[in-house]
Image 1: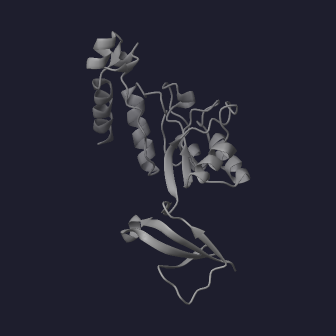
Image 2: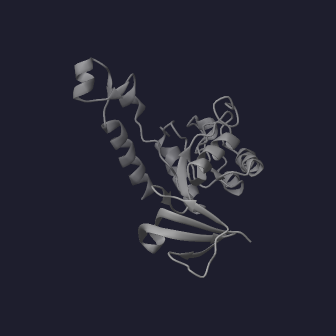
Image 3: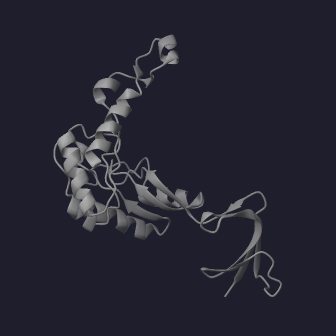
Length: 223
């Protein structure tokens, strides 16, 4: 089996509190050692000077657009781009068309990711059906389909009652809820952050309180 030596790279591994320039020795899928290994003769040497060598990164907020907007991105192209950048696992948002609000939609993501064979892809399910905030999505079915978390992405769950029930359901399955913290009444018509610059430009600003009040609400509901 081919023996690979990656040399001159900055090796970073938080699990081992490691951050320094070292040689890394790999055979197959196993790391054989770090630093000088005079007893080993590599079949291939990669000079990683000026580069970082680390465990695969994880991105918990990606938009893969499939199904519905494949002209922008697909699971195959997005996961390939992730892998090229050192990201080996991604979690995709449910703002697709149709949204990931039922079991079959979550299973579709896994199927497409498996076909692509690039980075690992995990679906995040909707909190509410069609992300409309009116009715809870099929939380149990989505968990069974492989959803790793729940959010309505860029749509806030306006109803405190629905958010409270979503938190209760997700706690049963030990799944996190990702809140889009925005009070739509406070951000209505806004085009930028509210502050000195918005006043200077004469543009409608969105106050920080629009996020703060929703965060406070959701923290209280989660208690």
